[in-house]
Length: 274
Image (cartoon, rainbow, N blue to C red):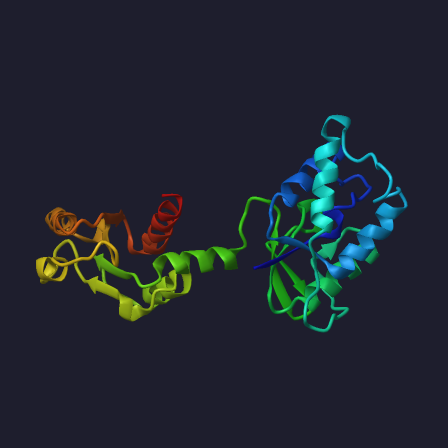
């Protein structure tokens, strides 16, 4: 995963819409706490040029509020030790949306982003840097996610993590019926191929066929059972719950077929926390 840091997350932008100094440095500390964020090569030189005017790194530069100065300096040093240089040719591409920072900072960010294509997952920034603040940034033909929360994972990283949780798993679904869009969503969002999704079609007026046989040998280390409760009769729900429990498998539940992916996402998050 590659996440580059906006230059103005490290060098405070002056102006009416910039963050107050204490809030700015607390954000620097939050960003520095993430070991997977990096400073692009061009951004690094742009930042150093501005900090050297203040005497950095040789002098004891006063940064941040006095009670938070040590943490601010440590965070700054940590970020500037994580310089990343990409393998693609840098390109002075058009950037959208409008960047409200220094024009040289904008150019540094553009060159770093294009140099890191296609492995760049996101840019860590601040909503006050953009007009308007959007979910994605576009550098010419390169489109990447914009992160505005230091605790948030890029969507691509989250998908990779979820896919790792579902690796070698089978998903057994009771209720409703398989559709191309539902199977495509499961594969796209969870990384589970359609041939690993075993669906027992059922409606409230149409009991499932061979449920005991098909769910009678579920393996807790491989199989995930889920019931679409809004599409089955209560007796079918009870039969599914009993069959799964007898195999040591928790039967997940969701009210509608459109909630299948979200329910499985939540299950994956619980597995990660366990």
